[in-house]
Length: 615
Image (cartoon, rainbow, N blue to C red; front, side, top):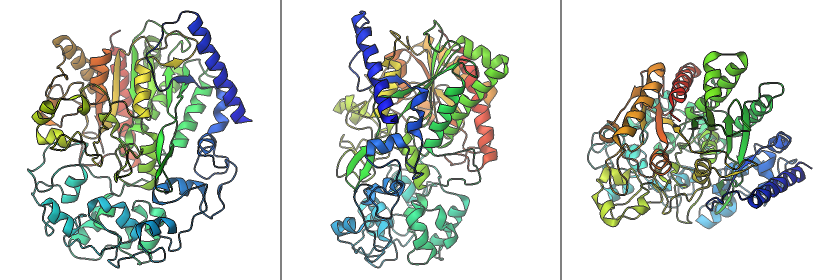
């Protein structure tokens, strides 16, 4: 019934589009999708009726049964098989995992490992651990060694030129694993100013456990529940059947169970969106919110270890005192979660939505002035599949989760390298050659000029190849399937949240390389003013133009495209990772006390920037 209702709504929207065309509405550029007005009556499709971890709307896309937690009756819930699809599971085909190591029997047969032995080659690391970390030298069939316990096997280190006996071959303060994991040569020149690319995602207790292993001592099993894909790795380690590799431990993403208000499942984020949209649609709350859904679902990996599958939907919120109109006011885009492990950015955008609507209803002067004087477009989570991979599997993840080729090991595309302005594919061979090695590495380009699809900064060979960046483009170009001729006249300003380091910067923060050109003096003044507006109430640092010298160059990012292609005064925020003024190397606060401080200060800064945004 709910599915039929959604089909009817889509049909109505299509009719509206046809009528609009007949009324001489100017044609839009070709797009892969549109933003559709989300109807409150469709919210029932987002429920998880069978409580298997997959909302009903997505179960329909996956063709699983929304009313049966185990659609194929194999004993594995659909949610488990969805999360472990990369390792051979399929929620529509019965699977067996005889040794309960997280790899299906058929998958192991294809790999020629043993489906009845969790450690086929007897080197003390589970088959699952070695398959997950095969990009760092691990092999399920051939025993491996990691003498220095740095996360890279000895043979692998010899092949790339780093030392099998030193955790940090070039003494730059980053382990060989951390450097290689982020796309840098662990035996190359010492790294500096690599915030956002190299950081800590694991807890203090995990850090101590890693240190024990590097000192030659047994790794305490008390950290088992913090391991990536703990559903299968934790029981094996807790029982002493295997030991966790240093790679598995360093890829752990600590999900603070003591912080219930933060880092919640994407389905809960979406449910909160519906509740807020329903309340602030004129009854019972003030009419200040409209909710939109992107017509194309994202793409996720995988089914039975090979095929991509439908991912999660993208949602956009408009906040305005007249949300059904396109007023002559500054239009501001706010975006969170381009990069999956930067968990705090979802908390920041979700809190902003909750707080500004609640304060508006309560009569707060500041909130009312901002909402009455601007149109705010809030894309809370740009990368929902990456977010769920990082949060749900407790694994360090940056990109989205679409497998771009059968040979790709580290799945996905870096969404903040996938925009067209300055995209690596648009640079000539001479321009690529002119990039310093650091710039190449930071944009997923090999020294040969080819793309490294396993890089954490892989931009894809084509800009706007991903549904997620197409949706951002659809916002900027006003691709809306509504009765209005144009929902967005042109984004005046934007903020894209990242982490970490506690600063605010702006577009074109790199050495200009044609066709990537510098910003004008007038725009520099405006961007500096906006950054100051955010920095003053938030306690963040306005990085001004030092970004080009003190940090790494980003080509193909959202800020550059929005500014140079669309004329938007675009900024980015690298949020604090712990308490105010403390950066460390954490991608996000690991306790609720620090997270509350970070969220509050970003709210204050955002409202001030929005209020200063020029028309």
